[in-house]
Image (cartoon, rainbow, N blue to C red):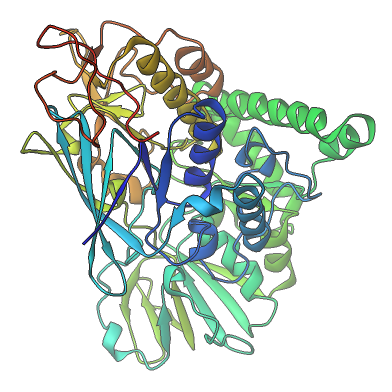
Length: 513
């Protein structure tokens, strides 16, 4: 068994983990860290998903890092460009040298006596146990199951004579050129896949049980282009980032407060892009209000252009069963296909399925409440990097990373070795952590921690409010309990304590300098 000792262990080398590492080494230069990555390459989502046309569904001025400007002209970027950006960031700041590849983190056990986590990972290739010892655990592993996506139990799947693939399992040898393709689903993955497949396929049909709200935006942001001509790349990036943040907040709140007006605006947008006479009511009018589920972005109207050209069609219906030739719909129609793509969603999984225990007691994360949407009640020295559901993922992750760095520096300055969120206000009521009604969220909401009805337990889903409550607020409040390692305990990583009287004299927080 191999063992490594660090102050902070980051789990995940995707866009969140690389960002966490940057903030940690820039703001807490005295602390050692390592990144445990399950796969043999960095990049997370942007390396893992390989389906045609994969791209961001957020603009890169807000999905990109706050500290490293996105300079590509395209605001809505393709997956390979984002992957290149993430890896270039890791290389530029030396973060890539801190990544330990091929380690699947399985268990983490906290010892109050030692003020330390013991984290067990399995080497993916050999199954050998690799152990980390750290004072702080920073989970940046995303929120979905890497092993499998979500696919409903369709009747008759075994009868279909063609090929069936979930986008999460897409490989380069899947052929679709000249074929009839059916894409099941109407979410962001389907809206991305359909126009890209239509470039080479004989025909693509998107089969949806119900429509999704869609909005078309240019892939190149005119304001960003103008800003780069007049300002430095850093200033231009900051201006565009804040412009998009504020417009995003305004749009989300407008949809939530005045849903009928929002529906009319979205409808007018569709009418500008879709050919006259098309049945917008049937195929593009969801049964819910705007932003009750995540809205789909259509860059440069590519989905609508393929629909207008006739290379794409939409079937709004329920699937009765799979047949030898394709799909039998509830309406009685049989949709023939050579390839069926089940873009039916993700299987959400908190912290990659990590097993947690504190002083020998198993922790059920679903029974905890999130402090500032990043730490768990009654769980010491652990933070979760979890992005927005109504805006770019990285916006929230940046705030979380900045807070964690401030927290660690505060603990260093005060001599604290542990920080535990405690629910001390009995008036705080419990609400679900995720507040959208999308199917992938509703299927998993019970497995996720809860949020509270009052700060600091409430998730605002608003970057400006979070900037105030997370980025600028005082570290110490009544909901955080700080402590030091008991003097009688053996030091976690072999650093001898100072000689001074008292059973609970403060010990050094830094564990591996």
